[in-house]
Image (cartoon, rainbow, N blue to C red; front, side):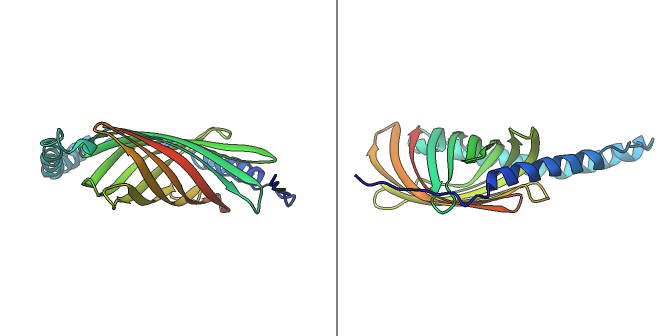
Length: 241
């Protein structure tokens, strides 16, 4: 029988993250306490709005055409629409820290939306975030290569505060799409709440017409309020098309 003994070093990184998150929340609350005095220049505001609307019209038309193109052959290119579910767990052996995450994403041509829960814990307790990438764009959306960018909100459960967060992800696949490596990066707010880099290799032993199942292993690096976490990860993924 193989036994692994993990001895914490006495310093709780999760407790430190919670303390810094609370300080960040308190400092933001005090900075936003001043009143805002609005101006009466409504005519100027309407003029600027008209200019903005005219500038946005070509962009909206371009997005509409891109969406129509991506959905035009979706019966054959089934990966363009559907759902993804990923379940992951990880460990940092040197610090006796663990994490688990659950992610679900819906895809519809050019657009996706992603909801993720991630939990980091050690002997002092847990630090949990609920991350909703409200809108993601599939800028490259082919069967063997995919590039995604998006933006949304990250909510810190224990501290009860939220930040804007943007992401980018890149996927590739080879050997008849049985192996798929990918890398992802996300950054929240203009301050320093979270920065995350992850990489993963998936193997798909089961592929059907409308569904796929995959095993994965990888690495996750996070900086939460300048506190560093590094995890070796394993997980499973389900793809419904």
